[in-house]
Amino acid sequence: MTTQENVLKILHLNDLHSHFENYPKIKRFFADKSEGYSDVLRFDIGDNVDRSHALSEATLGQDNVALMNALDLTAATIGNNEGLGLPKEKLDKLYAHANFDVVLANLKDKGKQPSWAVEKKRVTTSFGMTIDIFGLTAPYPLAYPQMGWDILEPESVLAQQLLESDADFTILLSHLGWRFDEQAAMTFDNLNLILGAHTHHLYEYGKYINDTMLAAAGRYGEYVGEVTLRFDDDFQCIQSEIMAEDVHHLAVLPGDKEWIQHQVNQGHERLRACQVAQLSQAFTNRLPEYEATQFVAGIIGEYYQVPAVVLNSGMIVEEIPQQLTLDDLHDILPHSIRMVKFTVTGLELLSIMQELYDIGNYLKTQRIVGMGFRGKQFGDIVTRGLDNQNNELLYQGSPVILTQTYAILVPDQYLFASYFPILKSSGSAEIQFPKFMREIIADDLSNRDNS
Image 1 (cartoon, rainbow, N blue to C red):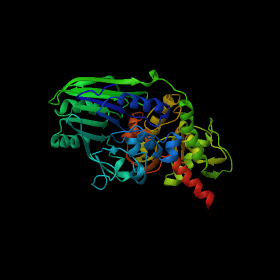
Image 2 (cartoon, rainbow, N blue to C red):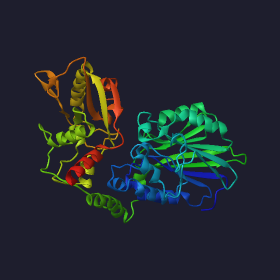
Image 3 (cartoon, helix red, strand yellow):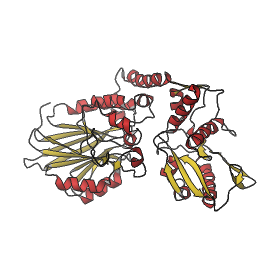
Image 4 (cartoon, rainbow, N blue to C red):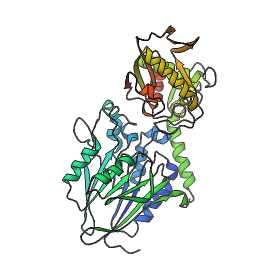
């Protein structure tokens, strides 16, 4: 293939979530579609790392970055799985060996730019066109400050960046979701291309709003994006082709399945090597006792010194064996979920528990996706420190007094999802950072075992 004049090729990936089963095809796609073009930009738009995969958990995303390096990326931005799924000190080191720039303007470290990211990246094409590349991630104002980061409102940051840009062409790597992207396309005159992510939306053949082009490639590497743009000598785009390629249409080659399985095996082996505890017994997770859920709830309640805990039994995905390793815990509690401490009145607590039981009963057989949940189904509502006896709610064995203040712990999924509006609007909520549920269990049991 001969070099194409005044043509810019852009390849992009988003929300892989450590679905390495699609990586071999993606890598070949990036290589094949780059061939013959002088000007190729390759991007990852965040949430590449998802600790639900054993290898991502074992390496805290370092192996993800190694695989990103092999794609020969121009730049990447982060998603909430990198920003909130990793402790600050681990995110600070995540890209230490990256051969690409991380572009991110709305996350700060004590008011300053993180050492591992740039606010924007400028490239110049072989035909002399300047391109400014911006990166923004979804703001979680309740979460990022608790993790040690300052998070800025993205629209004002983008407005300032575009105001200061004198580039011929601008690209936004947006881990912000389709609503923000489409609003930005309507708002800003000099925003030429938005590569979208976060809400797992798909623009199979792109979308055009005013003079802005939008592209997005779904989730999990099920699609990979390709944008081909032709410019005149004044750097005006005169032809565009946007497509999200379904990777199911791409060939499986010999060795792909073995490579995919190797990533899984490698992660499990590393986690299996870390012994957590020798328990006095194994715990099943069946009606009516839900021993495993009670066991987890008890440890979490003690850890945070909150006497009442609510968990759905589907949080405990596997039964708890007597000989417990980090690999077991990762299978049992694969979720990117922390606990939330709610402080409420007795009156609010009565309404909350009624809502949890009523809606929980509807949800229990539902296949829940998102908000950090990586289980199979929601399951039953299980409580510790809270009981219903003779239609009366007891808190630590005593009747709930309407005017008294009570503390309960629930998974942060209940706060972020839309299932429980009464809970979300009641009292005060404090997300318990930085540890995931399985990390709390591992720390507690390891300390007991070594004491």
